[in-house]
Length: 513
Ligand code: ATP
Image 1 (tube, rainbow, N blue to C red):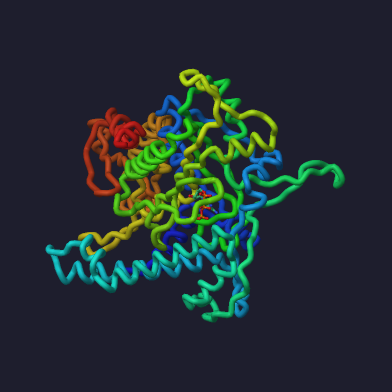
Image 2: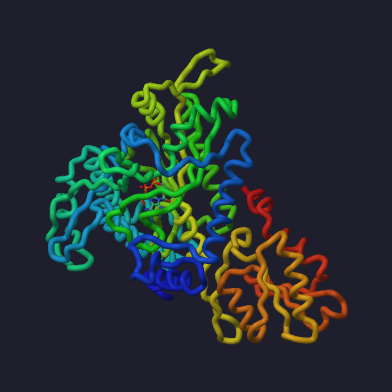
């Protein structure tokens, strides 16, 4: 089997070759950690956004969606804590001159130990066969428990030092663990420093009157400052949620890993406003609900896990990540945070305006508490794309590359292929396209032998190929070929629309939640 790095390289090159993701400004050698979505990528991204929006907004009577501006009054970011505390700890290696996030270096180190545990488990599973009890093995095998202890104490200490802003201890930890620079191999580190991740810009024409602004580092604040506007105009009753999707910007210290960590990215966030004291209950509900949304896409429950935070952000009283198995290991895909009344309280203080809710049932006013769900659209894109890309061995000793995107998310739902470019077959195929295009994205393709056209559609992720042949002229039937099974069915042209609809309809996918 190819190693992780090779698989990831394949993902990146496939994304480019098949019109999903391009490096931004490539003709000028690109801009680091900024990417453009190409013709297929834009569709896939739109479908993921829509899948989220339907699940969050359309299917929940008590959640509404907004679209706030990227620019916000600069005091917003004082109030939210981003001016003072939106920092990452950075460290430089003096030999390679490479810059790293100190916490990520340490987390990568513990991830390696985790890899060792996984190896032990795989070895033991092989040795014990059916009798293998993984839970018991993890709890009792001395080597594994030692590894686990090392991970736990390391992460705990990291969490504590970051919380106390004890950067000297973060450096001490890196030294004690003997972490070396992946480039130079040396342990010649600088001190750890804080680095603010917000991008600054200016609003206004003249230098004197220009106002310093930030590009928003998260979409959440656009929701908080509009909390009362939405509550009043929408006559919303607690508990209720406000959702939005939109661009966010972070000057990430180390932006690697393709679209996993970008400097300009898109978030899909929902802030759920609740009565103080009910946060634990709602936090659990949203954790479960969000996991169900992920699982509805059928990408394998073994590829997801929760990770509860040791180190809480300045605004949170509980936080967990949904992690996904990316080609480079389990990493954060979505965060669920219990944010208390931190944000609304801070905006009250800084704006001097009341941001309270009057609870008629209780006959009292209060600043609501908030549980947030926050997912990166680009990360979700990478999760879907990397998970779907597969190399398959076929019976005749050949292989095929197939992008098994969940059909509901696929950019193009069907390709219509006349078997040959003559005998009236293209005309029938065009008619089918003209009928289907009102409901789905479909393409027409007549170039090359039909087998090659199937392969091309497999690689781009089109779930259905509809082939028009000579029999079609006689009995108005076509074949539908299914991407994943490669099975072909003969069906009436009149039934094609309904058959595709059944497979790609959001209702049948989200209905599984
Ligand atoms: P990380 O620890 O990976 O930097 P974070 O904890 O800072 O992420 P949040 O502030 O909780 O992330 O943001 C919510 C979501 O936004 C993340 O779960 C992730 O999916 C997405 N996200 C955050 N930063 C980036 C980025 N630089 N590029 C792409 N997506 C991002």
